[in-house]
Length: 328
Image 1: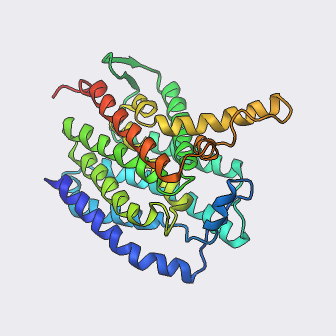
Image 2: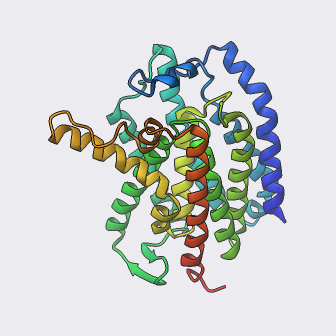
Image 3: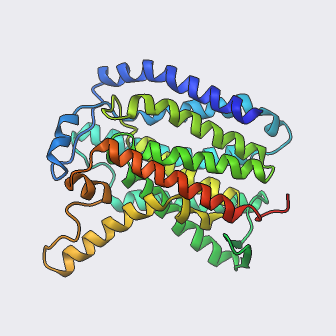
């Protein structure tokens, strides 16, 4: 099966690239700057190479070239559109990473700059997928097998909101060793299973490549991490998570399979709002959620196992909710 080939190629390429890229990043002194207001024990990670997301991005591209060529030959470019969409976010993240390295700080692009770039990418992707006939304004409700038609303008506003929100939620999840990687692997496997079930081989190949690339990256990113994915990797992953959901026309599955992402971003919002409303009091020990649990005594390994395991269970449940999306 081409899904297996895609997984193997992505895994192999990413594993090999890790051996090459990490020493190069060290020589370039591309070390992560750690937030001073974060957990004090994270300061030991200062200088760990960042932008490691480049290894799984390149690996995914190689895998879909090898395993997805047949679909491209049939004129099906859906998987390449999703990859290109995610790549745009990866480029935005890379610009942010380079800015941080240049200024030796944990701040790169400003929030308005990131938002406008991400919004433009989301709108462009939605318009492209509509023109190519890959996207409909019919909103599928998981589990109840109900589809609600929306006006295109309303759907595009909804899509832009979900895409930008998802990308930044995945970015927030990348706060401890291996967490965003471990949580996104079951999400990628979910998309692979859903795409295969719907007969969308191109998207199944892309999802398998995502899972394979991340599995190899985890070798280097698991605690204690030898490399971080950086915004280059986390924004790319966010683009893949929402891009695949919209390409499969099941965007409302994101809050289910991505409950960890949602919890992370909500905890950050709650912390900021509560802090302002109470004149300086904190709702959580520290935001986002993984830092709150760290401050409560959870190890990075425990966080990785619990959050990844929870996501795996949710992905299995979500699959039951979307099985009847298309006649099989």
